Amino acid sequence: MPELPEVEITKQGIEPFLRGQTIEKIVLRNLQLRWPIPQKLRKILPGLKIASITRRAKYILIDCSAGWLIIHLGMSGSLRVLNPSSETPTKHEHYDLHVSNNNIIRYRDPRKFGALIWTANNPNDHRLISHLGPEPLDDEFNSDFLHQKLQTKSSAVKLQIMNNQVVTGVGNIYANESLFHAGIRPSRRANDVSRRKLERLITAIKTTLKRAIRAGGSSLQDFYLADGSTGYFQQEYMVYGRDGEPCRKCETTIKSITLGQRSSFYCPKCQK
Ligand SMILES: [Zn+2]
Figure 1 (cartoon, rainbow, N blue to C red):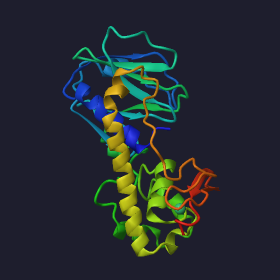
Figure 2: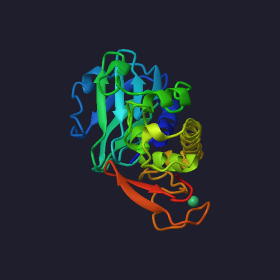
Figure 3: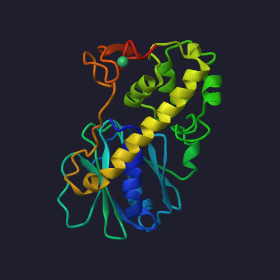
């Protein structure tokens, strides 16, 4: 599943091809994503100028001057840049955005849980976005903030850092990895984590996400020019997906438990 780093990389990847361009048309082949793609986009979009491309949580926001496109990649979505002579679309490629520099942004999504939404209003006020907590990489997400948020929460700390109203975009992989780096067991009660460990957790979340974004950035070239199958970069994880294998720090066997229906991985020795 695309997590925040993949969405950020996608945003960075398409931005140079879209910013300042005029939309020529949108080709909609399949409207049935998580919500139906509005057919009126065929009429609304042509002639609109793309002012900016930004990211909020796992949403890509395209400012089309007269309104905004909100894109979500769902479980299996990806965007890539093509030029008009490129190959014909396959059945999983649901829409193409044609822009004035002759490029096409093509959306592929085999599982169809993604979204393409139009709003004429500020996207930060949209019902999918308005309730979200701060961005993990913003200064606003710091240990004072997290301490204050968690002091009344007695559920597992991992569930809290994956809660979009506490902080956005920390998905399962990065929650697991950050808790390892901070030395915190995923099941520990959120309001029982020391202030010192919360500091380490904040640092770990930011570092882990930034490292993933950098790793993806270095593969951008391949990501956009190759076959476009998925392109999401594989990283070497410390605990994620490694139950039964030795901890990379202390060689204790990594354990797995289920929290909130998601798999959680930890080292019983390194994480208390
Ligand atoms: Zn260990």
